[in-house]
Length: 539
Image 1 (tube, one colour):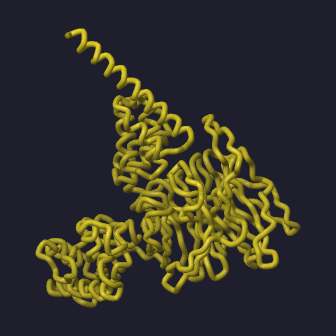
Image 2: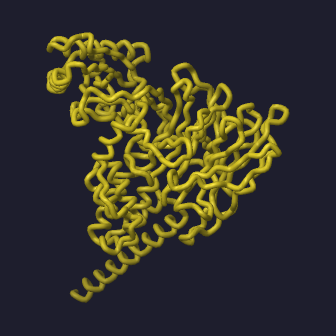
Image 3: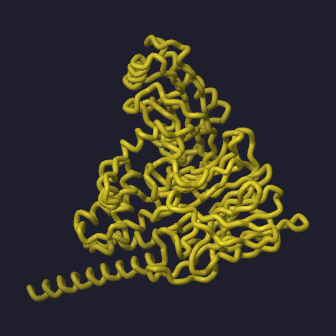
């Protein structure tokens, strides 16, 4: 009998080892194909994860913006194999830690990676003396099913890239359809409507994105993924990206051509044409780049030929990613980078003149996730950018105002990651029962904190912004949110705060904190998160 039990145990151990090996091989195959979601599923089934499995699992989560999971896996990686782990994993772990608000851990690993002290809180405070504008942003479409980014001006419309076309092939990286270009109309509030596929033969089964247009609307440039896959420095087969041009002929986009400095062997992407059409800015990892992707500029000659691409130099470019350039009407360059000091992952920066210095746009524009593809009409102080701060790539519109130093000290304020607006630190929101505008007893603790801070800063002005969940009509929810804002304001006034220092505004159901945008489909707790009053610093 003992022999029988021993034999069974050996068989079970052998079967388990075979299954574990099979999961690792499957994960490795998916990882090499950049099918990161499938790779993560396979690696998670491995019980005793070795260094390579942990490295790949962390990267699979990181590259699909699952930062909490990435942070936990990288932490385990360094606990088990610290001295043996390559420096690039410190860099990614630090960014993942930023996204999970673990700033001390991020400081530690950034400091080790760069070989010098990295102090996020010091950087954040220093920005108070250097930022020139404050940005108030709003997510445009509450659509978790698709990724939208890369918006650009297209006459009186806009164009952007999206994965919403379900007829396209599925891209293994994130298991979404390949990107197409879309056009949309924009109303006075910045809302998008009449979304349709970009006309003509611009879209294919490959990825198309990041369009830019000449001022006369007769020439466009855009990204398209190459058909051919080539091996990169890691011996992985990848399809690089090229920039194409197209001409408007007889009312149709035609004469689609790949630009001569594009290549099968490296990527050339994210074009942005300057105001007079004489220079094209773009990102590339072509030979001669500082590291990953750099920002370049090339002359566009009157005869339709191009000059030699010029790297913008070390004031802009780092050993890491610089992408999504936008050159404004006033000649200011905006771009995204994860190599300059920032709030974590891709941040938006600006530079002008000789492009010798990159300036972070600050906490009102940037989050600890990817913020990128920024465009602006500087004469109107309005624009757009993309961010995955809520999980998937989404479009945000914004208004811009001149920055004045706040009346509230840094220790008493913070930036709302959803809106970019300044709010009272460690105060939080108050919440309401369904279909009610009555202040709940437990909310009085939060409201009394607001009173205490307003008494501390006698010139502080606050907006009470109130919200409803998605159950009920738009009209009713707007009225309900206005009643909630009024009752919140009345409580503060009852505690001695001068009414002239307060404003109240109802936002209805237009600014949810999650994806509960329909009257059904969410739990009561998820809907309850959106029935709230927020406190925004107005000066």
